Amino acid sequence: DGGITQSPKYLFRKEGQNVTLSCEQNLNHDAMYWYRQDPGQGLRLIYYSQIVNDFQKGDIAEGYSVSREKKESFPLTVTSAQKNPTAFYLCASRVRGDQPQHFGDGTRLSIL
Amino acid sequence: GQSLEQPSEVTAVEGAIVQINCTYQTSGFYGLSWYQQHDGGAPTFLSYNALDGLEETGRFSSFLSRSDSYGYLLLQELQMKDSASYFCAVRDNYGQNFVFGPGTRLSVLP
Image 1 (spheres, each protein chain N blue to C red):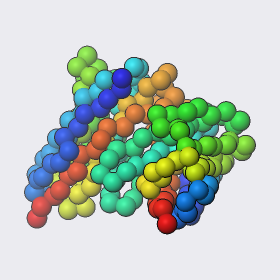
Image 2: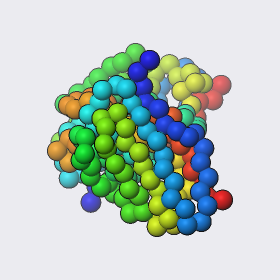
Image 3: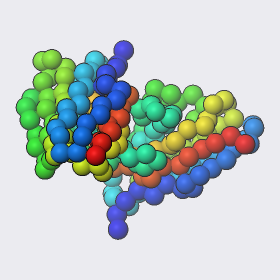
Image 4: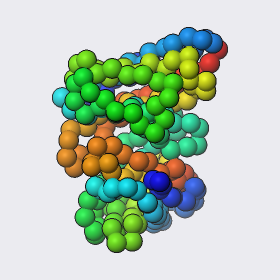
């Protein structure tokens, strides 16, 4: 079945550690997005990518990095520079034009 | 700046009709979307308006007035399973990305 797969579902980060969240889609979508959601809040855009080997910063990119080496994959690295990483991270993708975003099931990141 | 406003909470009983409003102020506008998110889950797409007027999809309808920078989601024949958070989102920046509202938590009571 086509869809977006995020892994892992739960992730724990130690002080000073970088961690990478995986996002893979087999929908043949061009655009991919990473959002952060804090409890009781809306979604805030971290990074997005319209095509392979190109990505743009969103509203809260500091302390995060991404890559887009393949159309299907858009991993997010939460670096040690992100001092408050505890949140629910959502990956989304869509085709271009007036089409909605499809979301993965999310990764819940906590600090140890 | 870019901002979307929604009521934080709405409560209604089963079988009732509820309207969730969204006002927006963004640098560009390419359409207003609505998403539903159950606790701990991923957002799922409900409806999209690019032009003024009403879009109907089953029990859910969405309305847009671009001149008023305003839209709403209308949920009819409420069911317990409709208890969730509802987010409006504007597609802007030449249509490249989305700005989400803070969400409205809907509680449906028996």
